[in-house]
Image 1 (cartoon, one colour):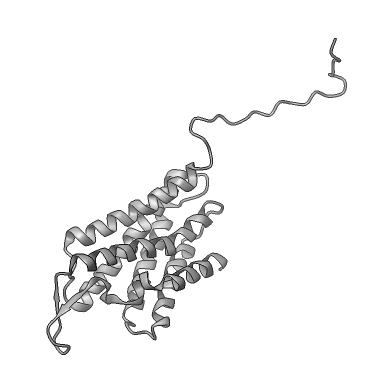
Image 2 (cartoon, one colour):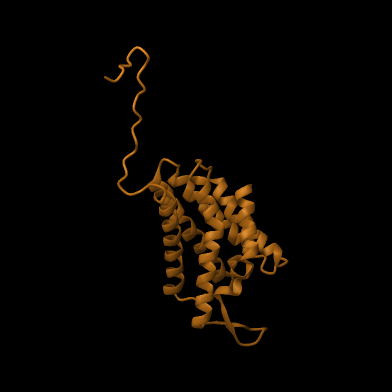
Length: 206
């Protein structure tokens, strides 16, 4: 709960970069308000969207990563930590795009499935890095699919939304590697404790 609340505070502070605060982040419209048409976004809109996905990825999944460094988490924990802050963003804007709530639910369930299948644990670094990298991929894939189904089209080309999925996965993979490997120097051997001689074994120096 503490980690989830920390993530929600971070999401509130960085709400301008919160993906689930508005679905227009990845859509560009033309035409009248009654009959809007989804069109290709501008370069500036793409850059803002990519930055928002990177920031939201850190806000949602770094708390999960930090917890998993110490404990083996039940699959429901990362799912809830992705779902609750996303819904909170919609509550903050008075459920302006309430249909994003089930989209967040689907993405969160997929995150839970990843953790249930991969089963990461503090002593299993490869599994932990795999789960960390796959979590944003499946979560944002559900988001893009939900937007496309709701609007009938997606303004992002496959290169843009596919690249977003790839780079957010690489982002979390890099953070997981830093968290797991950054504390110990490369090639450092663990210190071996020398046994302390007992009183009978002690030989005074000559």
